[in-house]
Image (cartoon, rainbow, N blue to C red; front, side, top):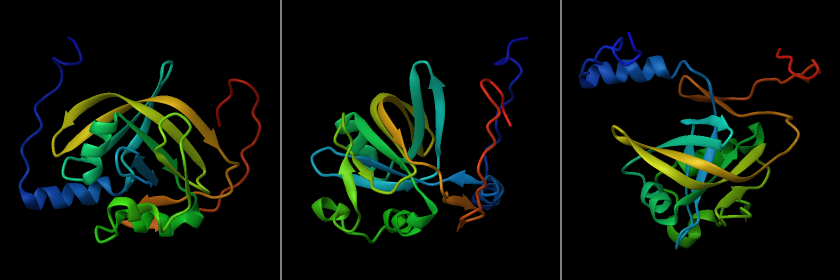
Length: 187
């Protein structure tokens, strides 16, 4: 039996079930990123639906609500940048999650950023790491689009702290230096 044959249909959920599902999914701790597109006018949003996909070729994915203004900006510019936020950047995460923030040219005036080397998309200064991506594909994900990004450039700072999102709140866990386990050894 193939994997596809073994899958069953997902039942349709009522709005009450959707709230319960959101609570369940909120139990998965995620990193916090800012997704940004250059386009005619820079556009950004806080995102935690982000993951690596492949090292060869280098691919990542991020999920964006179809109603978000950045959805169209990514489709038009065919590129985006992802900034992985440090614990010191909770204010940046809150800013880009705030629907009342300024839009248009003023949207990035309140934060410190620089243009990514390949696409010019905004990258947040002070981020733990960043990725500059071209849009490789866009897939239907219900009320979201799943953007697959081909990594054109990337960079990272030494990890001092990290911003996490868990159960609807931001958290700053204490990090300890990872042990050097040598090549090919996982913790």
